[in-house]
Image (cartoon, rainbow, N blue to C red; front, side, top):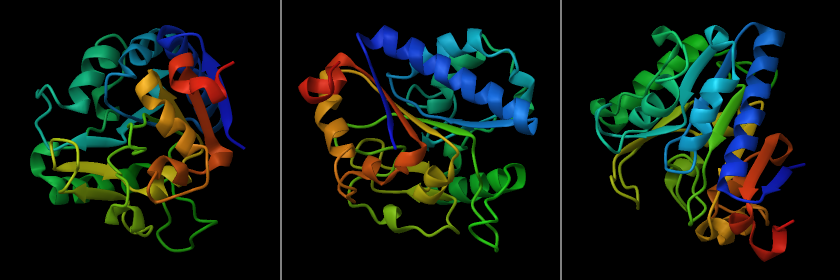
Length: 245
């Protein structure tokens, strides 16, 4: 069942998200010797990353991944990597060899192929569910949600939602949000994660959050996440009248 927490404002939501992320990562490192976490871009998680840099002490046991990326260079203002570098990596002592950025400058298809190969090489697969190659299992994925209900770069009704488990990472060429070319983890990888944490703040996200918690639908990609592995942290504005404390 989905774990839902509402907080009084965006700062409180960021504090709660950072605390939850630190707890999951420290548990993963304690249990398995390594913690795999994928991060998202956007304005919402920036404060969480600043707080997280101060809270988690075991960065040497953490492998850092990305949920999606725009097809731009790492110094571009639209780069998710740049956001993480300026907020988290600038403060946390994470060895560079454990930071796996999506190479957006390679373009959507080549960038996706390269990232899928790297992820498969580093992350264990769920072999109990699939006796073949399996799906890479991340310990934690932090996601935002768009007003249209998209997560990572998986948009409503897109063919990327139909990708099978062989497609670990996907090239996106027709994003309805600029830029049109992106790279995204696939829905099977999001669903295979031990925990997804969805963070949403602001009144513009309230309708999308309500739709996500309703019946699963390809028109609301966030609703397709595994609810038994999903934690949702909202501020009061994103919770709206129906979910507010």
